[in-house]
Image (cartoon, rainbow, N blue to C red; front, side, top):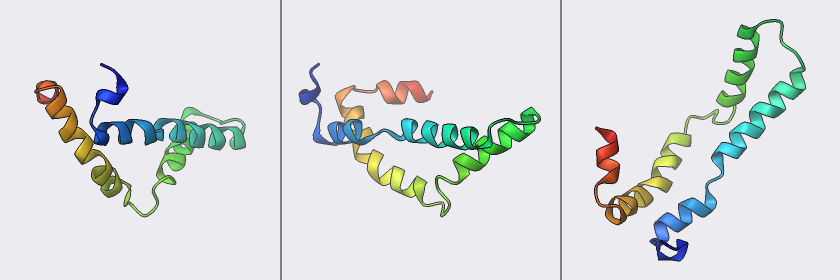
Amino acid sequence: MPFSAFDTEIRTVVCSTNAIESVNARIRRAVKARGHFPNEQAAVKCVHMAIMSLDPTGTGRKRWMMRWKPALNAFEIAFDGRLAAGRK
């Protein structure tokens, strides 16, 4: 199926979603700034703090839902029940 055959909602989300790259860059930046860790707990805490700093106000989930809800509905229509089957 060519990319242009998808609905507008799906194309918008696919073209504008690079959240994983952003999270990875933030984690790499935090780890690189620290340099080394005395133990595994310190490393986990650094990664946790980097991830928590991505959404300090806690409104990220609300924005995610507003952006993905139309796309998930379009995926459900385009792929006829595959999303529901994966949730079982």
